[in-house]
Image (cartoon, rainbow, N blue to C red; front, side):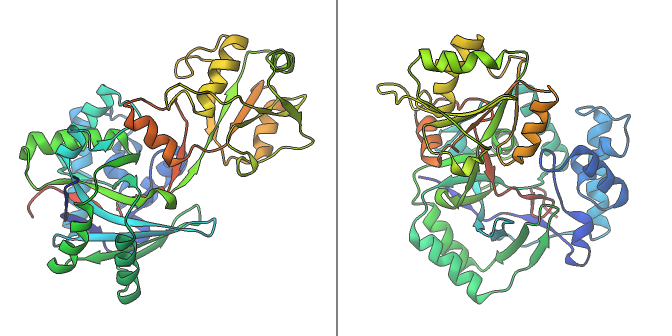
Length: 406
């Protein structure tokens, strides 16, 4: 079963929280992050990306880590962030789409990851993992929770509702994407033990976002504190039904899109010509939409049986039955002809790329379900590259796990 713990944290000063926390890399354009780091001396982006201030810094170098620690120490010294008593937290995001995305922030035992009870669906890059371990060692902290998921018991949802209804938020802030981030703190031992005991009945958790941080933090905890230390990596744990899962576009260039329709027809794959572009919300499981400068078509993929969970995915079927035999696109993680873009990117941006010849073909899918992701992870398989974009996306510096006794 899963072992969950309270966590020691640093939290930002609410009087200047707008100057401290930020959406991080991959969530905002780099130009925006650099501007924020330059404008706000207390912005946490300086801690995680000190090269945005000193362009001579080489990520992974001793000077890089020293400067990162300098900025963190300054935040603590100037009381911009402050140590907290051991706690657990409830986090909620009022998403710009109108839904609430919430879950518990707790520490999860590093051994649960190493022993396979926290399951992955992506491979990690060893060099990136090692750089992150070094960063955690120098800072003795982690800047934001990883996102884990499973089917949570109703008792856990009821506990969250009770706490929200009877307590006030300790932090609340809006981001550039019009999402509102809220945080509640639970620090009395009876309440914490009651909630943590529910986690201790869960058999497995699944990584939704943050594979490198899970791997690196687990490695750091074992190296620094040993096994069964009572230290956990900070995790936001949500019911899988509450996640917002979106697909990615696959963008192809240097191919002839006019060969697609004859190929699909000769392969007995049913196609429908569309008069206008559609969003991923209107695509069903088993359907895939192809956009070119000349046409928009929707294809009905065949159902495959007696294959792995990974091979049942719409992306896998498309790559195996269409992209490989037609365009000899064998490895989407390596082939320079393919790129990726979030599936909620406005369709007019896709059509513009097609009209100017930046790409030749765009492909959009129905989002994978968390059940599909679970099935792939349970079979110890890896999802195809850029298969899912999962929200909520969290703020860097809003909740910081602190491994140092202060």
